[in-house]
Length: 88
Image: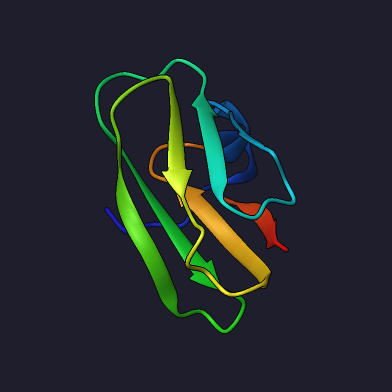
């Protein structure tokens, strides 16, 4: 609905984990309590969308080999707001 989340609403969201981080080729997303397809987005620190897609399982590998070295922000829809990624 576009409304900001309160601190309690954010803490109630499920978690996801990323590994390895830092990485060079692949990033694994492990979603806890995943139900169906999850949409992920990766943004540069400038806010530019650099990758978007769906993960279809609790644990999925994402190819990021073509991303330049740097820091990025990953968001998974319906999960805690964001995580930092470092690409070497």
